[in-house]
Length: 118
Image: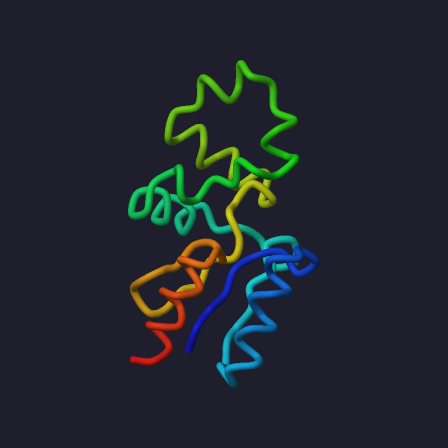
């Protein structure tokens, strides 16, 4: 079964869940705001997929950060920041067993579709 991580009221999350529903895919939804953020999980994602993939730099939370903070982030500091500001985690994160697909652009949608066909 797929586990999907994100924030319930996010438009991208709504599209992703609507897509899964339309495909008849069963999934478990983990809402960061309701269920919390697991630092070990965030650390694993960052180490496995890279900070550039996990960190949502398009959102207002990131854009509002002072340049001094943005420019001086190391990996551990970024993980701490992601745990404290769940809106900065790119959404959605689809967990498919031991593999994740992060985001819902056309490329990620294609990867998800391929994974669902297996």
